[in-house]
Image 1 (cartoon, rainbow, N blue to C red):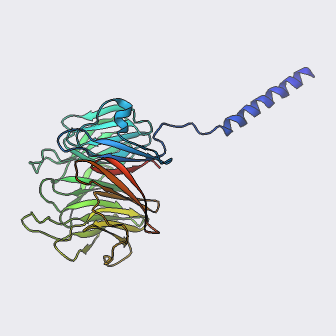
Image 2 (cartoon, rainbow, N blue to C red; image 1 turned 90 degrees about the vertical axis):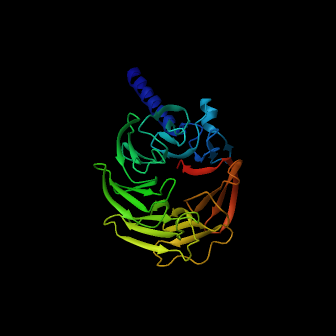
Image 3 (cartoon, rainbow, N blue to C red; image 1 turned 90 degrees about the horizontal axis):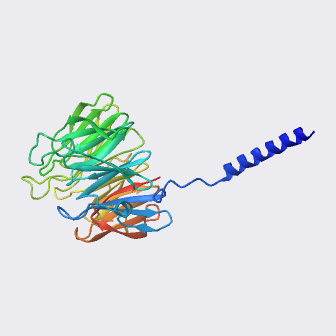
Length: 352
C-alpha cells in the first residue's frame, strides 16, 4: 500500500511540475526582440553609422551596436537584413558586412575582403545571402552580386552584373536586382535564377530604378526616378510592374521630365511613393497613377516603408545632424509619432 501511495505522489509531483513549466512565460531572446531598427548612414567619408532601436514599449535606444560591443560599425551603414537568428549589417564605405545576433546585437563576425567592395543591400534565399556590390565606382565592368553561405558566413561566389546594383527582391526563387547606375545612370533590372545563380534576363526599364517591392499577386514593382537635371538628358520617373512568372512588363509614366519619384513602399496591395514633397498611394490593380497626394503626409523623405497599416518615413534633415522618423496611420491619415534617429536614417527593419 505504501508503495502505491508513493508512486501516486511521484506522478502528481511530475504532473504539477510539467504544468508549471507550461505556464512559464516565454524566456526573452534579448533586449532587441520586440520592436524595429533604423539604420543611420552617418557622416559621409568620416565618422560611423549607427543603429537606432525602437521597442514596442516606446523606448528609443540610440547607437545600440556600439552600446553592446563598444566599437563603431564603420562608415556609411547602408542597410540591415535579418535571418532567423542573425542581423547582417551592410557597411558601405568600410567594405564590410557586420554579423550580429538580431536579438542582442552582440557581434559574431565580420565578412570582408576582395569579394566585398562597396556593398549596398542584401536579400536571403534559404541558406544563401545575396549582396549587391558596386566594386570600383569608376569601373562600369566590375559590379557584382556576392553570394554568402549563411551557415559559415563566408563568401561562396560572385555573379557579375551591370553598373550600379542596388536594391534586391527575391520572389519564387528569382532574384531581381535594380541597376541604378552608381555614379552615373542605368535602366536595367537583372533577374538571377537562385537555383543555379545564373543570370536569367536583363530587363530594360525606366532610368535610375531606385526601389523595388513585391505584391501578393506574383508581381514585382520597380520605381524609376528618371535621369536627374544634371544628366546629359533629364528624363521623368516611371513605375514598372514585372510579372514574376513570365517577366512581362507594364509601365506607368509620370507626366513631367522633372518628376523624380523615390522610396517605393508596399502594404498589402497598395503602393506608396514620395514625389515633390508629397506622398501618393497607388492600388496595384489601378490602370493609372494617382493625381492626388495623401493629405497630411507631406515631406521630403529619405526612405519609406509600410507595415501593418502604418507608413514609416525618414527625414534626413540637413544630412549632417540627427534625423527623424515619422510614423503615419494609413487608414486615418494621421501622424502617430515622430522619433529622433541618428544621422541620415536610411533603412527600417522590423523584428516581427
